Amino acid sequence: DGGLAGPASGALRHTGAGPHTRRQQGPHAHQVQADPSGRWVVSVDLGTDSVRVCTLTDGTPVPHREIALRPGSGPRHLAFHPDGTHAYVVNELAPTVTVCRWDASDGLLKPLTEVQVLADAPAGDAYPSGIVVSPDGRFVWTATRGEDVLSTLAVDGDDLRLLATVPCGGHWPRAIAESGGYLYVANERSGDVTWFALDPETGLPRRGGPGPGPASVKVPAASCVVFG
Image (cartoon, helix red, strand yellow):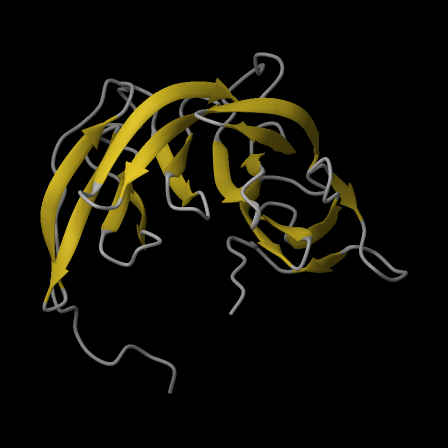
């Protein structure tokens, strides 16, 4: 029936807090995923400014290492580089991406630098949300809800360079996904999914699709885009 096969095989409860008095009163695990090698599971915790690396034993997460990020940054989501050597963490409480080196042989995430995703300081809370790495590993895209923009960053070794920002085509872009040379945006408050053609040379998104008609579809409270 499409439901879950049974109860959870195991659970891992985070502990801790951060310096942001309103948003970091306790742990807030925001994302969990396997690394490209399939050996490790990483969870990003906005409330404790950390990324936890675990192994799975009989379906139960076993803590391996906890990596601290800058206090108050509020890490939200993480995306791995396709070659498995780097990971990029988008921070919700600071409009930045933390560039990390990833060592799959030991499950080690090493923060290297932090890069702004906006050219100018936001007037209010920016609230970056989603992050995606291009299949060829040359570009990183992020969405920022408070500004309703998409940011394009170029991968430069152990660093990123902000190239441009463009309007997301809706309001409150909560999640983004790449598929077939297009970037899809789930705009929660405008209730739609918009899409952009990606320039293979520059990485810059251009609103529109391969045919005529609007490059959007209505989806009430759109919150996520996943391709199978």
